[in-house]
Length: 237
Length: 237
Image (cartoon, rainbow over all chains, first blue to last red; front, side):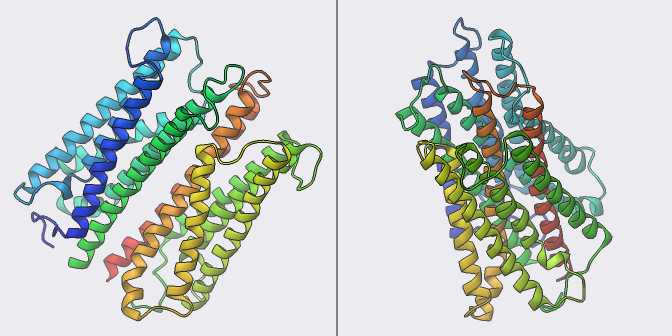
């Protein structure tokens, strides 16, 4: 396959990206349904500090998983009429948007901790989260410099592309995995004594775990849709 | 590269597999140090039911992450004098050993739950864990049937290899991610009211989170060592 042309769109590849879109919509709807319907809704300012926390899960999920997943697939999901250059700009812009949404989500949870007098950065979810969003920002910056402006030498770009893809998928996997840690941590807090706000098999517990499973399936679907297209390209070379 | 020959061993590839071995030893040592030094030791039978639980983290880690990681890299880490056929048998045997150790680890946590009257399968860690070990077993069985005995037709094997590698790495990533969920869940229990056995920034909390980070780095190192060798092979084709 020559540079500048689009990858061949097969029916199977189209089906795989469709699965990604459906899971992305489902994950977004489920996390909003949970935070609004069960947890009292989202607010940046509220006397009920939990409302500030509630901003965190949807924004992290929408930014670093849903938008990031669509950004990863931007080279493959756009119609054939869209040029490779336009796809690249969409990939770059979507990842910038995902990062911005994610940063607001991180701000929300620090604001919640500050106003509810909860210590920061003691949990594995926080450690992995800070590492993930930092790597996400560095990966975006490295991609911008190497492939957009000013752009590296052609030979360097060629050898950097596979590493950009592998490291990008690793950061995405970290984001998906850390979403799992976040869901588990929050549900474990809600199930803890003395309050035991949520039962072990209660409706909210099942909703949170089901949402986490949908997010995990979304992550797997993005990886499979990306890797498959890559091996198609290798075969075509 | 022709089938039947070994992949070219570069200094960088050797360094990557060395990192895997070092992290594997470190992760095993840390999880044993935690379960024996801080949690009272491992036992299949004990009046202190926590000792039965303590069998679970080391066995899951050793089986589905440490041995599985070495199995994944068996094609790349053996000296050049070892034949491809011997590497394949090592790959198969190590994965079988990893699965067996993992199954004993799962048995231990069900035994703990039964004797301590704790409900089963309510948490995301349990859900993802059951899915992971089931997929691990299916992946092993599919690999055995396709590549060992009776073996699929040559053309089928050729097209199945990339999927075997991608799906295998996905199952491995699930195992690494679920280890993270396990560490976070156990530590959150230990930090919960009313007992608050472990402080948020206490020595044991830092040990558990640090162990989890080493396991995560081990997982990333295995993926990078594997994927890099794959792209070397693609270049050589």
